[in-house]
Amino acid sequence: MAAQQLAADVARSSSVDARESAAGLADAVKKVAVRSAEKDRTSSCSFADRIARASIDTFRALLKHQRLEEGEGQNVLSTFCVHRGGVPGTLEVVALGVGTKFMPQHLVAQDAQGRHIRDSHAEVLARRALKRYLYQQLLRYQEERTRQAAILELDGDKGRYKLRDGVSLHMYTSSQPCGNACLKRWAKARKEKYVDANEGELYPPFPHPKFHVTALEDGQVALLLKKDPSDNTSGSRLSTGISASGSGSMVSCTRVGTVAPGTQVAVAGHPGTVSCSDKIALWNALGVQGALLSHFLEPLYLSSITIGRKFSRPHCERALCCRLAPSCAATLAASNNMFVLHHPSLLGTSIKLDQGAICTDDSNISSGANFSSSPCFVWSHTEVDMECIDGRCGLVAPEAPTAAASHRPSSVCKSALLALWSDVLKRRGRLCCGSQPEALAHRSYRDIKVAASAYQKAKALVLSGSSPLSSWPRADAYLEDFKHVDDGMGDR
Image (tube, rainbow, N blue to C red; front, top):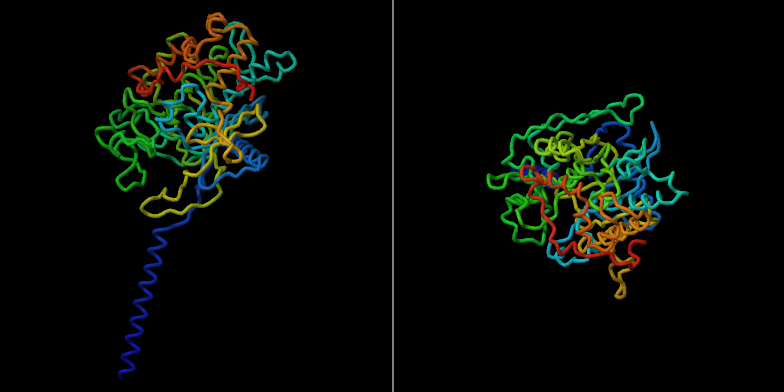
């Protein structure tokens, strides 16, 4: 009888242990799960996948050519592509950026010569590389033997260059841009549906519905800054996109509204790095060429923007262009200049940049994503190799980190782009703003920006008091008072 009782006790104990073991295993599985770094998704159309494949293939080829490592963890890739001809035509990646870093403000304040890249997010690096490419295209146009190969042509009536007929400009980014586009509120996300393009079209038309501001005080259209991890003075965690659990999920309060992970609200008079959503919105109003190139170019607008992971059409429409419509669309149109609020076709792609996996837990769904160790790269079609940017200081990292090696300025920093501007001015011999070349040839970077009068007038309208971008931080004057010194930087 005792033996039978002992056997029964052992059986019960074993059963309890088994249940506890199973419960513990299930709990462990619940706490730590492995999932794909990028979820499966549906493309908007075949052109979106074509753009994504060309962009990713170009990046992989450059890595292989230079025998570089992509780095551990996750990263973001952005490109600008030129399409020529009809359907299907030719597609060429002309500018590329990879990165998720930006300089802290205390280091930005020390860069009085424009030699550091302050924002090394992929979208911003790619746009800098695009500017370098456009300068080279202007130089090609000045040479008779290369003129026909340039993507630009001279508009005789306006005296500025524009894209040739049949040439269009497209942007790709592997992840939804940081900032307002990441706020999945005030609109219902819909699963993307694949649509075939009509005959003779590159991609189907995706018109943007009229946008209405319904939650102004909650931050529906507000400008956001990238959260500076070294800044401990920006206010409470409710203003930085970090929840009490530290998970980085969105938070809301009546004082500052809603902010996206990794961002903070802009405070008037305080410096900061503007989110990529806000920068792209500005490009869709003023063009991607910027102030200096506006001395030579008409505004260059994007025909399409293709987005990879986390793409949500209604939220991107709001963030990247439509939220500016109520405040500045009519004003820009009435100003009788070259600028309009442009609404590019927004496309989603199923092509993944990251084919790997990440670990997550139930309390923090993004805990496995690791952007901390990812490198930054920038490349223009004018160059053979990518530059590896140290995003912490905005300089090109030495190839071999030795005691004698040192960082150097990038070929797409402000100082280098100013050198290219000066080179184009010397070759062309005149400006489109009415100023004489000699009047600006030896002036500061800031003076040349201000002299782009049509661009500055349009920018003032877009950043006016009623605009969502009215709190855009203004650069301190001393940070743009540098002048071009012919030291060869523009030729790298």
